[in-house]
Amino acid sequence: MLDKKSNKLSLLTILVGTILLFDVGTIISNIYIAPILEGYGLPDIFIYLKTIIFLFIFIILLLWQNNHTFNFTKSSLRIMVYLGFFTIVAYFFSLFMYKYILIYDTAEIIRNNILYGNPNLVFDFSAMNYKTLSYISTIFGGFNSEAILFVEALAFQALLFKTKDLEILEEKKHQYDIFLFDPLVPILFIIASLVAFLSINIFTFRYDDLGSIEMGISIFGFIVALSGISPALNLYKSRSDAVSKSFFKGTYKLLLILTVVSVLTFISLVVINILFIDLGRGSYRIITSFIGLIVSIVLGVKIYLKMSLDNK
Image (cartoon, rainbow, N blue to C red; front, side):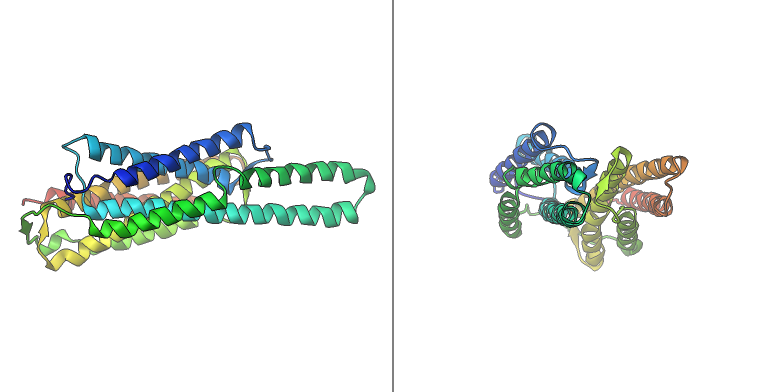
């Protein structure tokens, strides 16, 4: 368990709050300032996920600083910082690829539809290209430009290294029974991450309303499932060592929360894919979503049973 007196985490809280303000500014810019393109791009979906994740981290940090009964372990904090860091990296990559696709499509329109196309449509295609390029230039100068994201990633990486030196309270350690460390838990988290990734519609860069909702939920489900792999592995590796009660219970509580969120995520994906089938747009993702739901339910049952057997 982290020591509240020695670890104020004020710098991390300020950084997360600043990034959260930039994200809100980006959303406002996308709605009121940037030219509206047809459909939704991957960064348009990612910015809402990034905002939700950083809002969650910000609330946890505020609870840590202002609520004396709220505690969490060093490993939980590091996972939270890792989550923020990789969210920034993923958003950076999605923004870079999306801009590349838009510029490539614009170049194709100029070559095939303007230079070698029907001269009567030059004005229409020029207006379309101007709108696209204006959108790209607005992003370059906005809150979510690659330069700002690069600085955010560097700052988070520096704080990630700093979390290794955080002080923890001295606690009594216990030797837990070996059967309380289920080897299937990390394996099931890996499977859940895999099927969540396969549930992502990675074959297109633009989505309609329902498609954007599915994309956002599937990416969120992948992030949640992926976040459970490291703590599950760390817990299982400690099966032969004496560990503190806060580490044992805290890790299982974290895994249970992630599992509950994963179950809700896969339920949403199953419902959305059923709607897609009704609309004649069904895909293999209904199968992966259903497998992910079953795996998450099994995970939740296993984790809950292990937690209920703790008698230390």
